[in-house]
Image: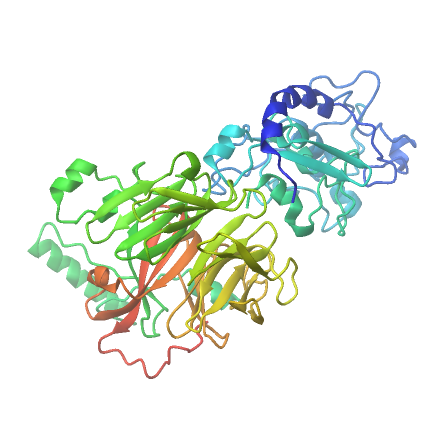
Length: 237
Length: 386
């Protein structure tokens, strides 16, 4: 459980929220080497580590929240987790498909778009091809996100007012990461992207602030699952 | 497993006529229809009763009625009241998202997390009231309530992280706790001792009721026997033992009031007698244990020997359904208010109050009883239904 200093957070909230979102959407100095996102050993990257996602020149500027983007973006039509899936859900999904930074993740994790589709070429190595049956693609063949935690949903103070089962994202301080790599701030500044819950709310793609205390295989999680700590970061149970 | 789901999703309705042969049923239905169209243009709506367990087991538990807001207290014959207060039972004055329930001296207390207060359904005067508290007594996220013998109301609040105390007139008296050392989910009073289930430190905090001094704690955080993780709800057994439901350890544990561990029941799973999200817990005079499971959306009944007896309740859109249930309460003292909802011949012994955090019915009242003329000797109450 994280210690929540409400009064301090309230004072700091406005400053932190406006300043940090920019910072967070930029590339962090991470330790991607050796992680599941290190494709430098694959023939199709030519030994480069960043190229699957990023390029210094002629990047795709049409995709939002995608700095120097180099990868093909998913064209799948997803079924969102929304109030038709769970009648008790108060948050609303941002449109009929994922938005923002989640689109980038799903541009490989949809299981359909090839990992080696980047730099204008169309590849063949999808997650389904690489991992075969039981691959960890999100949505799988049906492109359904209804059995995953909802994403692209607005999570603001008003929502936490409607549902007291959620912490106020602007007033609740949390810490992510582990060991020497930790970062603290409000839920809005540390977990959310443009005020929305996205894949990046729980996962740190660049392995920058990942809680290595998690005793299970850690899929780039910002907070450990031990004692349901990750869930309880936002859910006030 | 399949059997379990099958029964869970089955609606249990006792009809006056039980026909097993489809062809005969059809003929009878046609005859009935002919009769209805011939005899009357507005046929009387057939009364349906929902019973558990399913046929052919003898009926034990009947759904009686639901209380969600002031409109539910109106006498059905009172057209004027209906006109004044409106016909919409989903009105804003009602309870939005209840958790805990308590009943004492003709009043049902229903804690509303989202309405931030507690509702009172006065069964004697057919009166509804809602208390939110103000200033030091303001409730931010009230969860459970315990009404003491002198009428004092003790309410747990997991945003303020204190127990808020009101007197019998709903005036604020005091808070217990400093707002940071514990997170109180449930509260129980036995004589002069307050038992507070603490979901921050995962222990039971025991306080002196009058001095507010901490006396001792029960358990420690962990998952071994005698340890606790998210002790959501508590109840007292007839032999004065403390029963604790643990949402985080998916089980029930029994302790003495002094904190000695007695036994543990259940484990995580979807089978009979297993738990996914155990919450509210209550025990009848025979020692049978009633446990709400918010994931299965039913109430499992376990004998005092720890054997699974049966379960009741299911999610859905009907009034008798329970959706995201939270609390259950066995009560023997207010049966007379609800006997009128029972099917003629079904004699109530005690009622079961079940709260739903979602759906049309916020508080469902079930009744345990026996049907006249039904032979209960062939299937003992402790027969396993699955």
